[in-house]
Each structure stands twice: as structure tokens, then as C-alpha cells.
Amino acid sequence: MIGAITALLQRNKPMNTLIKNKRIYLREIVKSDASFMYNLMNQHNWLSYIGDKNIKSVSAAAKYIESGPRLSYKNNGYGLYVVVDIGTDQLVGVCGLMKRAYLNAPDLGFAISEDFYRKGYAFEAAQLILKMVNSLVETDVIYAIVKTENAGSRQLLSKLGFCVEAQTGLEAMESELVGLLLYKAKINK
Figure (cartoon, helix red, strand yellow):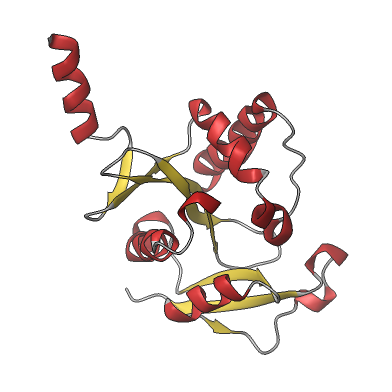
């Protein structure tokens, strides 16, 4: 009985909740999320639109979590966060801010598992990140980078108030940035 009560209390107060709305909450990515991250990072759209991060096993995903999002929390005070459905406790994707050496402000990133496409999760998660950006980092703008052929993400960024930068500076960067658009949004303080 006590175990059931404890489980119910934990479900109602998700671990490390960063921010939430009525349907989802965001929390830090932890090592126990490695199986989810392995599956997400090997889905067709992740590989096509974000790129192959060479995550070929759950243990490789666990290492990525430590050297990617967890290190970013420590070094930058922000990173990617897991998007969790409150009603089911299912992990549905990731969303957050990333530090890029070639940008002078954070970059909004998001990826939703293909099982949860077209249900509004990416939009809601990105709204939550934009709502709390000033508590994470001092900035007047947020960037987002998207492949030109990724119509869904481009549409989402426009809906969030991002605009394509005319002169991106990405053209002069390394070859992996070819075919990318830089979006920018002003942050209300």
C-alpha cells in the first residue's frame, strides 16, 4: 500500500520538472532515458533532419546524454530537456536550448518521436522553452537552425514567431551547414 501511495505521489510530482502546462512537462534528460534517446536518435526524421550522431546502442546513448545534455546543463545552465506527456508519463521527445560556437545566442532545438507526430507536442514544448528562456540565459534573441527541406519544422518556427535571417553567415561555415536556414526570434523580457 505504501509503495502504491509513493508511486502516485511521484506521478503527480514529476522528477526534476523544469516547466509544465496542462498536457506536458519538461525535465532534464537523465541516464535512465538512454533507451528512449537511442530510439529517438535512430528514427528516420532524426537521421534525415538532424543527422546521424553515431548512436548505435543504448550504452552509446547513455554516453551521449552525459557528454551532451548533462554537460550542457553544467557548462551553460541549459540544454535539451525530455518532453513528457502528463496523462501517460510517456516520453514523447526532446526540446531545449543549445550553445553553438558559431552563434552569439542559444539555438532552439526540438525532436518528437514519430509515434507522436502532428499532435502539437513540439509546439507546446517550444512555447514552454520560450516562456522561460530568460530564467535560463540572458539574451534578446533565440536562433533555430533547420534544413531547407524540413517543411514541418519551418512551419512550426514560423508559428512560434521565428523569421528567416536574410544573411545568415552559415554559408561560410563548415560543409555540414550547407542546406540549412537560420531562424531568429526576439525574446520579450
